Structures are given as C-alpha cells and as structure tokens.
Amino acid sequence: MTPPAILHVTSLFGGGVDRHLRDVLAGVARPQLVWHAGEAGEAIEEPAAKRFFPLAAGAFAASRDKLAAWLASHRVGLVHLHALGDAPRERAVWAARELGVPLVVTLHDVLFLDPAAFERADPLAGDAAWLAKITPVLRSAARVMAPSVWLAELASERIPGLEVEVIPNGAPVRVREAIAPREDFSRQNPARVVALLGAIGPHKGSDLVDDLALQLAPHGIALVVVGYLDRRLFPGWRSPGSLFVHGAFEEGDAPGLLLGYGASLVLFPNAVPDSFSYALSDAWAAGVPVLAAPVGAIAARIREHGGGWLLADRFDAPAIAREIASLVGGDRESERARVQSSLDASPAARVPAVDDMTRSLDALYARYGIEPAATGGPDARALEALVATNLDGNLFRTELVRLCDEMAQTLAALEATKARASAFETEARGWIAKLEGDVAAVQAQLRTANEARDALAKEADELRLNREALGRLPSPIRRLLLKLAFDARR
Image (cartoon, rainbow, N blue to C red; front, side):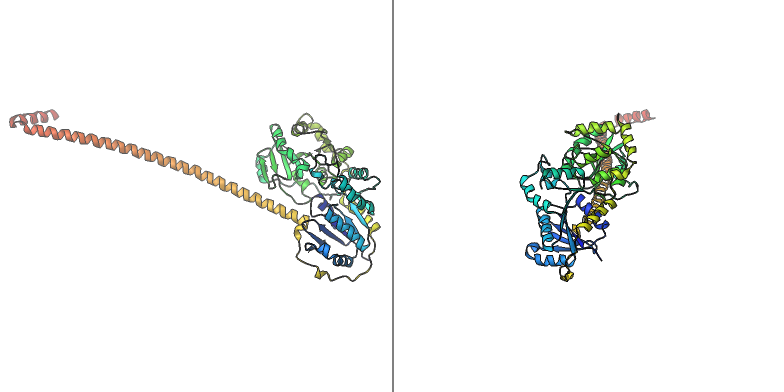
C-alpha cells in the first residue's frame, strides 16, 4: 500500500533550505506536498505532478475547511515544518491539528533564536519574546532535527530540555570535473585565486570583500565570487584583475567551478554563524581547503575533520589578507598543499552523502507518519490554478542563471559597441587632423600665391610708369636708350 503523504511547510525563500527540501523530494519515495507560505503570498505544490496551487489572499483564513479536505484527500499523514516564521508555523500547526497527524520540525539556521538574527550585531543573542512564541511548538513536535551538532546543541541550550536529533545535510557524490570559467576572467588569468562561494550578503561578509580584494592584489591573488554579491549580481570584473563575480550557477556546479577557476582556497568570512553550510561541502567535494570564521557549524566541522583553518575571534580585511597571503603562495604554501592533499582521504566523513540523509528522513517519516482516515475529498481540479513556477527554487535558479548570462552578453555587446565607437572616434580624429592639415597647407599656398600676385602687380605698375616716362623723352634720346638696352640684353 502507498505510504501516507508528507506535507512540508516552508517559507517563500530559497537558499540552503530549498536545496535541502529538493533533495528530500527527490530522494524519499513517498507522496509529498510542499506548502510555501509567506506574508506576500502562498501556494501548495505537488512536486511529483509538477503542479502548483496558488492560494488567493485570505484563502487560509476564509477557506480552512476546503484546505483541510483537500489535504486529507491527499492522505497527508505527517507535517514537516522547515521554517518558524509566523506564516509557515501557523499553517503547519493548524494542518497537523486539523488532520490529527504528528508534526516534526527541522531547524535550518539561527533564525529560531530571532527572526531578525541576520541583522543583529550579535546574531546569537536571541529574542526572548520570539523564543517564548516558538518554544511551545518545538516542545509539542514529535521530533526536532538540525543539520549539525553545533546547531542542535545551541537549540538545546536556549530551550532547556529540548531534544534535537542531528541529520546532516547530504550532498550528491559527483565526479570532479572542471567547468570552464567565464571568458573575461580567462583573458586576464590571475596567477592565484581565492574563492567565495554562494550568495554573499552582509551576513556572509560582503562588507569585507572590496577592501580584501585591494589588500590581496599586491600579492597577485584575485578574489573570485563563485555566485554573486549583494552589490553585484551579474558576471564580470568588479575590480579589474582583483575581484571577479561569476554570477549565479546551476545547482551542483560549485565544485566544478572551483576547479575551473583554479581556486587554492575558499574563504568563509561569515558575520552570522552558519548552521551547516552546503558551500563548505562543495569546497571539500572539489578538494579545496578553506579559511573560515571561528564560530558556527563551519568552524565545528573544520575542527572535527580538518580541511582548513580558522580566523581569529576578531578579524577584518587586513587580517584576512595576511592569512591568505601566507597560505597562498606565501611561507605556509606547503602547509596549504598538504591540507589540500589530505582532502582526498575519507571524503564521506567530511561530506555526508545525500542518500544517507534521505534514508534517515525516510526512516523518521516511517516512524512518525500515520495512516490518515479515508476520505473522498474534493476534486483536485476545482482547486487547480495557474502554475506558479517562480516558487520553485530550482526553476528560479535556472532563470537567474539565464538572466545573468543575458546580462553578461548585453554588457559584453555594450563594451564591444563602445570599443567600436572609440575606434571610429580615433579614426575620425585622424581624418579630421589630416583634413585640418590639408586645409592649413592650402591656406599657406593661397597666401603665397596672393603675395606673388601682389608683387607682380607692383612690378607691372613700375613698368607702366617707366614706359610712360620713356615716352616723354625726345625721339633721338629714346632711340639711343632703347638701343643701349637691347645691346645689354645680347
């Protein structure tokens, strides 16, 4: 018999949560639904059928009976909550209660402490009112999970007595094949490369990037963002020769791109502690060592497995640059090379396999999922509407990659047009200069001709006067003078 369905409830945001969810949908052989819930909109997704049911504004408040009947008709036997924001939390708790099925929760990041944690000076301080709101939900859940020991221990510390099971985020096992970098990067071909990986915003250290690139440039080291910055989304050089942005990429391409760009090191200057880090798994899958902030799951994984170094408790761009310059081409280059070689040993311990993750979750679903009561339910077609593919993080990533590539092509075409315009301007200025020279030469010749004409006119006047004077002389004298002039010319 077909097992009961799992209803995943998440926010509208993508990132690591969406990657995790897509791996679960692909790897767990059970019927599954996804409820994407946010303040701006929401939709229910049927992944197997590749269908979305966008919900009209206010539908949850006004039509809960219809939603419950529709979910029951799909034999939902377990609700899995992936985000603790107000909208997804309210819907997950309601669905579990209305359907009479268990609720399980995965803590994916430190936002369980405070929904504004990413913007706080101390992201781990927590908000007492928020914790008071979400603690009853976590305590009532049949199971609470986290992707790392670090995050599980943090949750148990802040919510005393809460048991949290660790199920690490898995990554697919891939053959290491380099993916060629972008052409405008290859044309400059920096001697050494250090990479940042993913979408780099303030919580991941974007405020340090520009200054760090300047600090590394004298050492012949270029920073490459395999992904994008909050201040530059499209591909290209942000600082020629020192800071390059690759742009968005297809899921799973990160290891190949790190190899293609020839990264010697991957940097994680996170301002907010990470809860697991797919990016770290991608770096290690590519065999590239890392340098990271000293707090969070990334630091815990490095302490446990090696594969990199940790920054001091307080760091800035100059401090990071000194560490990088020492490890990449500096006095610790041999140490970096040894660590890089060690990454080929026991990769499974450092990078959990996605199959292991999905098997663990499948076992958990089998343990807590219940067989729902039989119901005829409504006709699904009555709820079907336009497909909202923009809610699928994979489709959005593909679209973002396409748009970034089109932006890069447009910018390249603009640069080519500017180059052609510059060449035309240079050529036109040359022709203008030649024309101006020719005009000046003609004007000089004209002045010389005018001067010669004036001289001839003056000489003609003198000859006319001399002739008139000669005509006034007596005839014998005139004849004598003419004879003397004739004889002088002989």
